[in-house]
Each structure stands twice: as C-alpha cells, then as structure tokens.
Image (tube, rainbow, N blue to C red; front, side, top):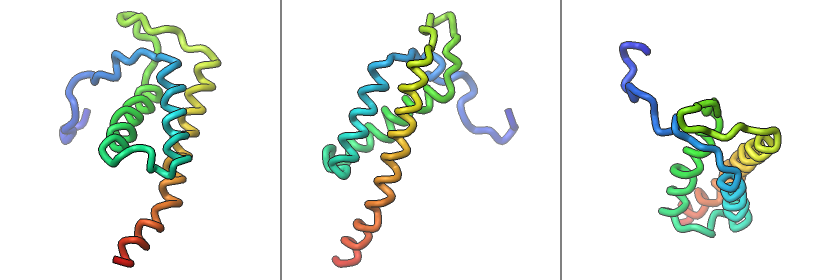
Length: 113
C-alpha cells in the first residue's frame, strides 16, 4: 500500500460475498427492463440505488471474489455460474451503451428550454 493511499485500511464487505445464482438472474432481468423502458421503469432515486448501489456492488464482488474463503463456506463456482456472470457483465455493458445512445436526446431537450 502506498503512503498516499486514503482508502480502506482493512478488507471490505465484499470479502464476505456469497454467490447466489438467483441474484445474478434477477439483476439481468432488471437491466433488461430498464433498457426496454428506455430507463423510465424506475424513478431517479431507485435507478441510482440499483445502478450505483446494488448493481455496482454485485458486479464488483463477482469480478473480485476468489470464491474460496472457507471461513464463510462459499459455494464452489461452476461453469454454469460463469455463464450467468458473463451474461450479467454483457447486460451491464448493454445498459451503459443504451444510456450513451439516449444521452444526446437529453441534451437536445435541455437546449430547447
């Protein structure tokens, strides 16, 4: 750790992460609903809670977890789980691509005012 590091000095809560397949499937469904509704299915607060809260922590935990912490008896990850995780990452990327495609429309709406 460098002397200038200002982050957490100990392990974060993601070290206690337990992979649950249903969480990943549910997140993919929610992402697809957001994309289909062009981000109108949630109000601004719930959208922020989902994307910057739940979804960020879920994806970050999946990408950084070693799935081997015996203290918390994490289940062994299987190839079908990798398929779900890759599908979630793909949906995550599609979500942001869709948002970037819609972004110019919001600028036009602001400029017209």
